[in-house]
Image (tube, rainbow, N blue to C red; front, side, top):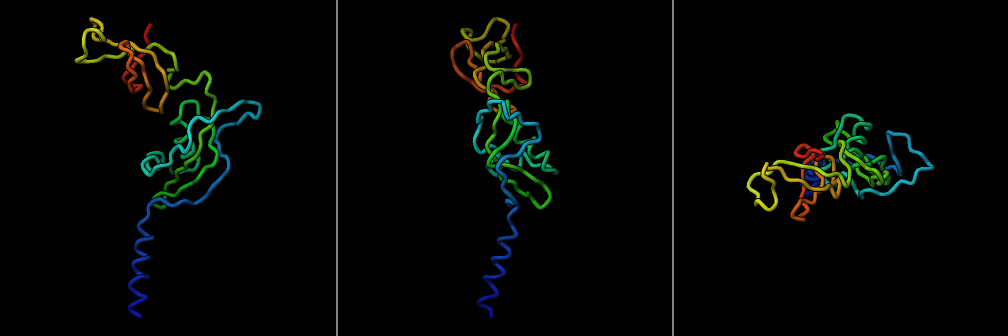
Amino acid sequence: MKFYFIPTVALILLSGCTDVKQIGKVNMISNRNVDPKQDYELLINYAGGSKKELKNSKAVTLEGAIDATVRKVPGGEFLTNTKIYMIKGKYIAVEGDVFGIKANTSYRGFKIGDKVTWKEKGLKNTVKSTTGFVTGIITSLKDDKICLVKNNAGETIEKKYDDISKAL
């Protein structure tokens, strides 16, 4: 009897420790109207797939979880190959392939090709102007917080949307 009791208790305790549990799969899910005539492109695979991403995009409702995952990808419209997770028994998160319209994609008023400026400290005079501001061109909208910018020196760097502004 003792031989079966200890492994059974250990198995129950280990299975109860998991805080992320998959509760379903769907082929496609969206909170927005999807136009069947529109030519959507795959923007990113497995968005929200890691445990950290799942916990960062958790919401109380399924609608909120979908929005949190899709909005992280600039231009995102809907998810395919979606897995739905329950986190700590009360939150919902989703993972899937984000589709959207790549052309004319903008996020927070910025789009690829925009000339932007930001304040930098400690740069060489060849890169920064006399005012301390650096200019560059947005080359990619990485996610909901960061974009990639090619600066005057030709280097591609990550900049937060909060740190940049459009240049004239």
